[in-house]
Length: 233
Image 1 (cartoon, rainbow, N blue to C red):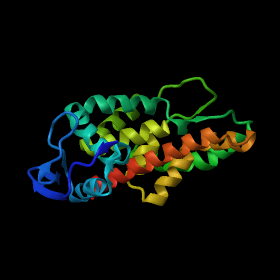
Image 2 (cartoon, rainbow, N blue to C red):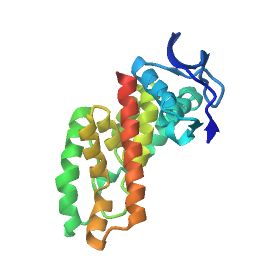
Image 3 (cartoon, rainbow, N blue to C red):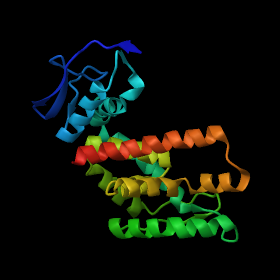
């Protein structure tokens, strides 16, 4: 915790976007760059985080600030490297790896995952290989090239949000589908990505720490999705 050192929080229209001012001084990133949000919506959300602080500043209650810092200090410098890291998730996407066809879990995976994958393939003009069992099978090179081209179209802020969602869901398909999702739809996508965890919990019982971890990951996923919505207006 840090003692609050400012009174007034305002939002300034600056070159490139919007910057939060604390007592008239512009907020900077951890790396020392001006923290400029590309949209007023994100700028207002960043300002709201600072306004909510009490006598003590809780860094954990500033997640949008942290994401914005990451975009400016890391992602914007080499977005291609971030995209390349995400392509590795497409190679082993959760939604493509199924139980053996004779297992009960396979039927639920087909019911939940197959419509999502089919819609994704139609929307992006790609073909994804489905795998039963644990043995890896590569995705078609043309599919990976198309997904890489899709990621290349994203601005650094959106790319960072997609990266976060991809990592949490272990699924690039889920993250890209969430780009156009409303909040309720985004939650349904997260639940789909967690289908196997839920199956195991139903089968063997729920463990409190595991449920708490999953709840935190869900909150982070939805926050990243919300971050993207703020960026895209």
